[in-house]
Image 1: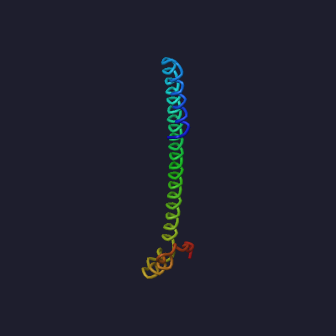
Image 2: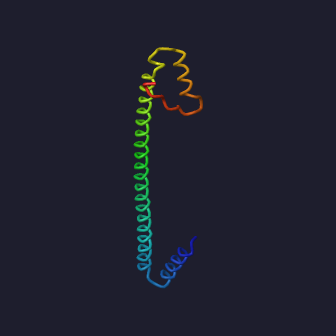
Image 3: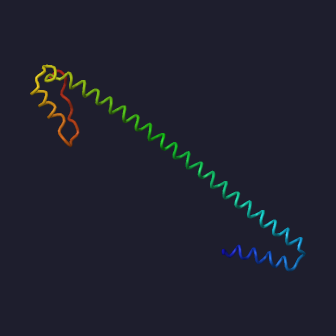
Length: 122
């Protein structure tokens, strides 16, 4: 038991021994009221902290979702540009399978990022 609680109870018992029972009840009521107020304050503070943390997590998840949406849009746009450039390249336009395969093999090396596509005029 914490020292301060021990001291409070010791003081209450001393007061009860040296004063009338009605005063003792009043003192007990004051101590209980003070404890109830402290418990209420603790619960209120914890509730406010929980609300603040929930709001922060909601904001964080919203930012992550916006970032993912933006990145996805950029990736789709880049893929569309690469596919258009590939469709307009000379080997694809000529319909030569061997040249198309060679171009794709040059552009998409396994375990590497795709290389830049040649200009459509080449």
